[in-house]
Structure formats: C-alpha cells, structure tokens
Length: 129
Image: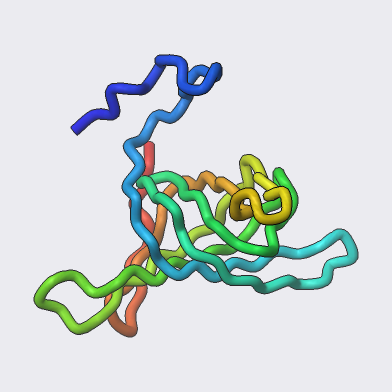
C-alpha cells in the first residue's frame, strides 16, 4: 500500500520519502570511525524501517553524514525459530538530539540495500540498477 502523505506537507515540511516505512522495533547495532580513526560501537532500537533506510532511537548518535556499518536483529517470523538479521553500510542523513526529558534522540540512515541472514549464512543485498 502506498503512503498517501508523499509529496504533501506535514508539520510545515514537504515529505520527500520515496519508500514506505514500517513501524518495526528491532535491536540495532552500529559502528563508525571517528575523526581520529577510533572505532565506536553503539546500540539502539529502530523506530521504523524501509527497504532503503531506517530511523534508530539511541542515546549515542553518530554525526550527520557519517558512513556507518549497521546490523538489525528482527524478531522471528511466525512459525520460525530463527531471528532475521539485516546488515548494511549506510549514510547518516540527519541526527535528532533530544532536549532533556522531551523526546528520545535518534538518527536517520539511508542505504543501497540490506544483506540478510536467518541462520549462519549471509545472503548479499540485491543489486539495484
């Protein structure tokens, strides 16, 4: 089902998303290198996810425009015992820092696609082109 809000104004801004987003809460682990080549690893939870991106709620956000590695741990599907993992290289589009007690901090990412696994072997992300 298409998102009927595309191209319309929401809260005074024009909606620019091209993909439908799904409200899925899944554990997210992400890595990025800081300016001194130090590696940072943090965790969060997805607020929503699409085929090309996600929004992650976390207390520690990477900087905007940072290239990150991210892995999502989706809950098992009905009738299966294994959880599904999605993995991608992504770009941080924006960071939303919360004012104390107001909302939760988080960041939006975009990716060319996700590789996924439901066991011990990884299936590469699909070619887009």
